[in-house]
Image 1 (tube, one colour):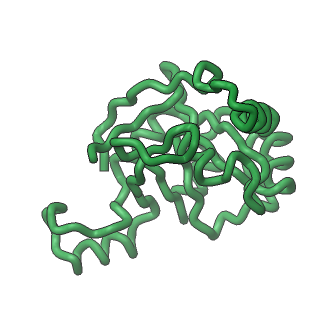
Image 2: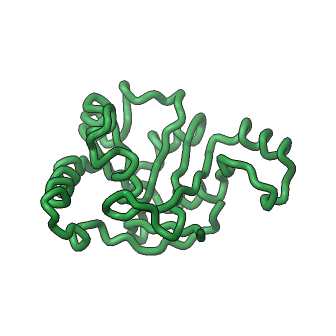
Length: 185
């Protein structure tokens, strides 16, 4: 399987997705960033793939993931995140020892994980899609410096979920994600 980042992006921003409970989502939408109910001391995962997010949150049906947010962040921030991420799982082709990798994992505030991309029905596709974990200084910068806009797309997700259940082809209604080029982790 090959790795590829596909995303909805502009010259200045790239969209990532996250799903949360009502309290966190309400605060984020109201304030344009995450606040009180969002835990800065925990790792948070961002995903540029809409369908991977739908797979992960069950199209907004999983507990504490009922609200789906589209978060536009600065492209230079996303590029920084990807370039400075440490892979979540070790493999011998990384060019470093297992001990060195464990040290990097412990010291890094950014993790990178590649999972099979998903189709509309949750089936794995032939390539892997990225998700990025942020903690410590990285999550602080995400919340305070990198977020440009937060949009609640929960109603859109529900509408797509219902049309999918009725057998309607939702492919044309999905975000038009394009290949995104950046040096990948």
